[in-house]
Image 1: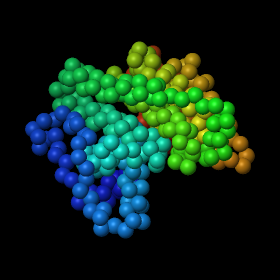
Image 2 (image 1 turned 45 degrees about the vertical axis):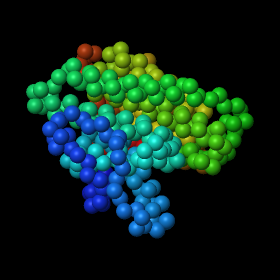
Image 3 (image 1 turned 180 degrees about the vertical axis):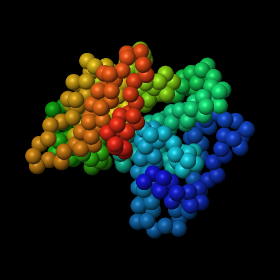
Image 4 (image 1 turned 30 degrees about the vertical axis):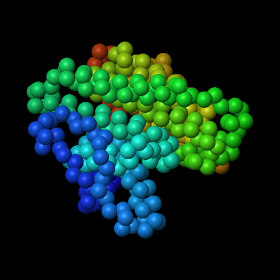
Length: 315
């Protein structure tokens, strides 16, 4: 689906994004500069709304898919165009998926960093010092986001919680029809979950799938805490991507807490299928880990999916 959508978008008259090789530099480009030259003025209002919705959902899906499975030749050609689909200082995904745009852009930076690392490693010229330097710049942005999220954290009253439960269903992203303070808190919780999950992802890109590394242990615990906070207070489902990424690197003592994030099925209500499927793959990952020596790099989320014969798009 992602490759097909990428092929469709590549036919549009989008702005020329200079590649790293054209600049004589193989470093990951700083991806957040200008906009795309898409002739939206030729579209009707309805067509434009549909087009903007498609672009936003495509960008969100693209980032999730490439962060989970890596780049294909088609997505590699598209990756530097994705940031141009977001308006400068805008929040396209805030109203579409309930999270702030910059979180997806930083996850995209980590995808680019992982691709750079893999290519440099294959060419025999990976500099650990340079890898750590680039990762530190991304981590600084994530830590700034964590600080902002903590400062904007609100304590909802019981009445606000009741309003949330009446205003939307458990499987949808928050909508602007919610009271503003509740909507902003929903967005903050969703964004916080993605920020912490991105930090786990970054640590894995730098260090590998080693759950006992200090920074991986701490970032997994912080992600789990953010997800538990959201599960206890939000009317929308927790996002599957940070749940899955953190769960794959969890400590054995944390397994029950990850299992508890999957709410029991209630007759007459829509089940949280994506979270249930994610847990099934996590159980496979944990089973493989149990059979491995502790010092060995553990089972990745891709390996766990392959073992089960599945490929889930973690939305």
